[in-house]
Amino acid sequence: MSQPISFNYIKLSGSKLSPESFGNKEPRINEVYEYMNREKVKIDRWDMVPVTFADGVHWLSVTTYNYARNALNTSHTSPYEAHEGASFDVAKGAWLIIGDPIPAQPPIGAPKNERYVYIKTVLSEELGLKPFIVEEKFVFKCFKGEDISIGRVRNYRYLLAAYKRDGNSLPETELKQTFLWKNYLSNPQVIKILEDVSKHMKKKPWYIERMNEYALAQYKAVWRDVASEFIPAVEASGAIPDHNVHYVIVNSLDEAYYLVTILLAPQINAVVRELSPWIGHVQPRFIKYFKLPKYNPGNIVHRRLVEIGRLIHNEGEDALKKVLKEIEELVRKLWNTSNATIGIKRS
Image (cartoon, rainbow, N blue to C red):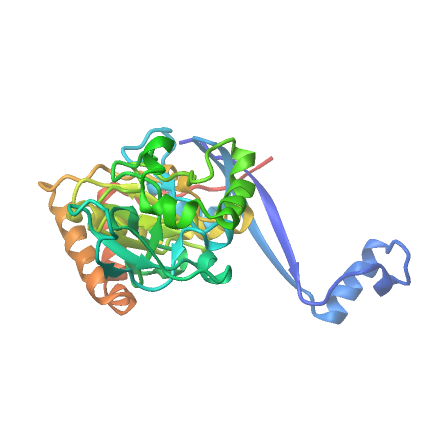
C-alpha cells in the first residue's frame, strides 16, 4: 500500500491570543513564541493523512488511521443504509402527545369497530384546549435522541399523526371524516400553526417530514445524532425515531444486536471522535465509512457479537465496560486486520 501524503495539524490551547496581547500591533514571530512560553500555551501536534470515503476526502491522525485502517470502507458500497428520523417535534409540539393516551368510549355515531383514546398534545395544552378524542390508530409510539442510552431506548413517548401504518399520509378526503380532524386539526389555531410550518415544504399541513415506511420498520439499530461517537441502541418495537436519531433497518432482533455491537467497537469510535468535531454530528453517512459485513447467523464471530449485543441491551454501559476489549478483538477478526502500519511521507 502506498504511503499517504500527510500534513502536520497544530492546535493551540490555553491563554487566548488577541491583538491586545501585543499592543494592538502585528507581532513578530519571536514575540508570539515568547508570549506562548510566558502564558503557558499548550501546543498539540498531529500528523494527519487523507482517507477517501464515498462522500469525499476526510483527514485522520496517523495514530487513528493505523489503529482503524482495516475497518475503513473505501469501496463506496455497504450492505447497510442509514436514515434520519422523522421531524415530529415541530409546530410547537402539535404532534407530540403529553403522557399516555387514555382509552375512551366511541363517540356518538362513531364506528364501533374502531378504538378511541383521550389525548392532549404540547400544542393543545399551550392553546388551552381540553383533552380530545381521536382514533387510536393515529397514535404512534416514538422516541427522541435524548431517550437513547448505550444499548437500549430507555424512554418512549407518543405522537399523533394523520398517517397509515404503512407510512403513507391520509388523503385529505379521508382525513376529514376522522375525529382527528373534527376534534383537533380543524381547529383554526392548530391548522394555522401547522400551515406556517408546512408552507415552505409545499406540503399539506399534516405532513411530517421523513414519516415513512422506513421509520415504521420494526427492527432498527439506532443512534444519537448529537454526540461525539456512536451511542447506539437496539429498537425492536417499531417506534418512530425523531430527527435527532439516525437508524439502520435490519431484518431481525439478532441482526440489531450484531450491528449495535460493531458500532461500539473502539476502532470505529476512534475514527468518529476525530470526524464528529469537524462535522458536528454522528450523521447517517458515517455508516458507510466502515466495513460492516452483512449479518450471517452461520458465522461464529457474528453469533458472538449478537450475544454481546444482547448483554449490552439488557445491562447497559456497565456491561459494555466488561466486554469492550473482546469487541475490539472480535471486530479485528471480522476485518482480518493485519498489524501493518504506515509511515509518513511529507508533502
